[in-house]
Image (cartoon, rainbow, N blue to C red; front, side, top):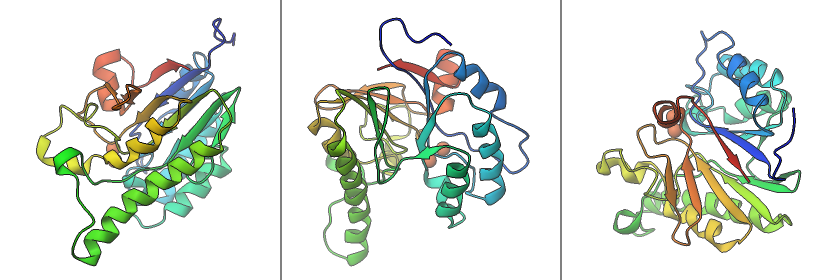
Length: 243
Ligand SMILES: [Fe+2]
Ligand SMILES: [Fe+2]
């Protein structure tokens, strides 16, 4: 496969695979196609439908057949069965780099990723006030933002991509009912992204009915790569960014 002629890395991204336990090689053909047109594949969470062992094993087989490096994060669906560590280790055994605590570098481009969390945006943002459970809820979003920041700080590359499941901005969830915006992401994830100059793009999933492109307050491009957003727009369930 020839590299991009402009010296950039071709980064394919897709979110919300939702692999089910009765699927048969659901992404085998697609991953082969992506391997022919990109240098790296990012999976932006909700890799499985319920976080079942069998679902993860089915996806793992397709990851094994992919000819380019596969990196990504888990989504809320991957937690549903209460065994995200099992899902994670099955995918890691298949060669996927599951981002969570540690950033990764490929050909001069850094990748930092976390699942992220809920919490809302602007006036709709939940504040850590009152009951302990409200504070714990907010703390989860803060902890995900901190993990992202720690990874971004370790990168020594000029260019990096932040990989998330939940959205860091409102722009890419527009199209969803405003009443559920606070369940689709948290603006707290945006702070580390805008703090580091080397972040050139952000990809996330989760908002199946959101919008493809948005910008952080400092103007960095954010892409909602949920396959249900991409398919009607691009005619294929993934996008390829040049970083
Ligand atoms: Fe999803
Ligand atoms: Fe999700």
